[in-house]
Length: 285
Image (cartoon, rainbow, N blue to C red; front, side, top):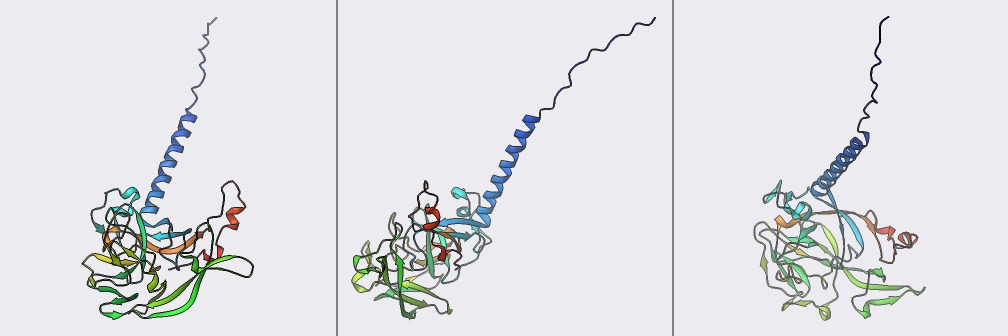
């Protein structure tokens, strides 16, 4: 009679399913983060308008997409301006009239948005509130007043510009003009007149000395001519920006993807809709 030995039975080792799932999830997050960084650095990046320097085209509370590729890439294209790109690669020069986001001199750490007025070699000057480019006056045509509703994001520059509609709604009414560049490109500006001239750091915004734009730079101006600290003023922290290096370009304004009048409350979801300026969404440049 043959003895048989019963083999010891051991429980099968279960695969580390939980650990594998955690590793897969972490890998997914890293890939997602990498995609977001690539998208924001080289394709599109969101940008919000924090002031009224670009009225009437842009309102405080507008959110737009900035295209990152039209003018090339520099360290300012990257999150936190990480210095991984030397100079500016695939560089292309903007055109007069483009609305551009850039790092504002002298500290180059704050995003500004202005309109390109002068390119290298151009002479730019303001005379009695009129723009002169290369010695020639830029046509400036008076058009209908610009009207915007008063809201938490919008206050009238002066009490004299505030008015009431028949239903009691408060509005701001500003004198509006259309400027047309030599290329035929036109845009709208606000000008409050000689009695409202801006004067920062001893510079009269309506009467400036002629400036020649150096190579690799841009002369930038806000469309709200009496409420914009731009290239008319020297580059001072919290003041003007001087002539802006093209290497400071972050992107080109493309489309308004959302706009709010500032009256929304996070704890009141229904106000997210009532505060939206639906008529501004989708506006292009």
